[in-house]
Length: 192
Image 1 (cartoon, rainbow, N blue to C red):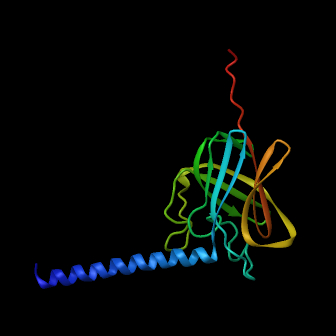
Image 2 (cartoon, rainbow, N blue to C red):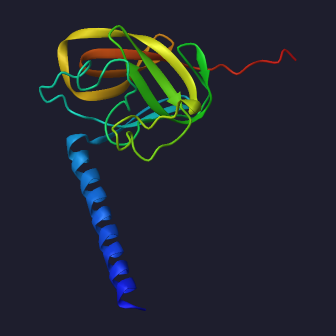
């Protein structure tokens, strides 16, 4: 092996090691600022799960500035947020089949679009800091109203609440809150 090839291979090896170290460093340091969380809901044989990363407000203006209005948001930080259901469900009256989805949102002042996408992505944003979401894989897009509270939520939070015969997936941060109504889909009867 000639010396030029050896030198080139050494340089490539160093670049690969540095790249791996930088990626590891970025992933571990971003996790301290936006830790991972998994929230679950189960009732009977229905199981729902959301995996996401929880950024902090840190005296920032969140919606309309840090998270621009009318642009796709990865709905948290770091990796794309995922939503999993083991049963077919109705989300705001529209069917969502059992499966795992990435969860994206488009925050607006009065309402948010909530998007369930069937593709899994390596990270929530690309190198230009735009959401990785490919709309071709959108399975369901709904729009829900925004409500506001007097108290500010410091850390982005997703949780499940039950009311009457509905389950609400609640997303809240700062003084903004949305509630996505979910209901287990009843098995269809064939009439036979």
